[in-house]
Image (cartoon, rainbow, N blue to C red; front, side, top):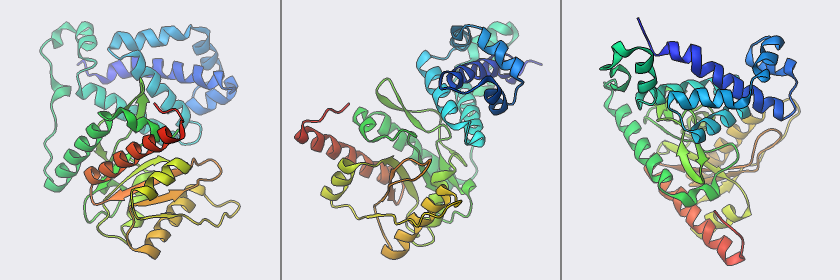
Length: 321
């Protein structure tokens, strides 16, 4: 038996671990701390760092990945893994599954096992039995494509990258909400989704949406953009209904929980909103949350904000991408 998971264990995972170890080390993490983060021994980290970084890049390129894809994935995992290993693992595994489904590793796998020359197992999509869920995923696919085709969108993307989620109408849990597991990142100055939409593919935005739906049942989608004064001005000038969170910072209180709670409070007060601004807090970047009936309508609002953002920047003589 010659399953593709063998490639992950032997080549893909060791190479990604190597690159993440290098990234963490370059930002000041000790070998002992890196070992703790990656679940390895200090001697293993020492051995990883003794090899040239390009060795790991070459292994992944030989598998079929581009340098841009490798760099993007490495940075996402490095950013998440010290504080949220579950999210980092989700990003890694979603990227792997998406690459398999796109046939990225097929040639490499067939070179390992010529007997698999006619194999297309990973390329076959599983049919969805639930029509509503299929429709949600189809809309998200189209919404993501709209973002990827709008190069100017990178101007309103936050450092934590972008995600967009859409729920089934009677969503009860995170598993009823579809999102992009690896998020949407900047790749060669363009927005690019790391993987395809799937249910349970987002945690933070899914939790935001679940709480908001308690007070606004017609809201089924949300996207996060960066927050600054130009974004704020763009939203106001477009006539969108907006509000800003009010947080009572309590020592020891989880900041993410506080943000989610404060966003839902704005909907509780207003009933219906297009946008909620949140100035963030310790360990959490300021974000602009754009809401709507579905992901297509949310992206339409987000693209309008991005276009208006460029116009305002141009009037001010400030550079944009």
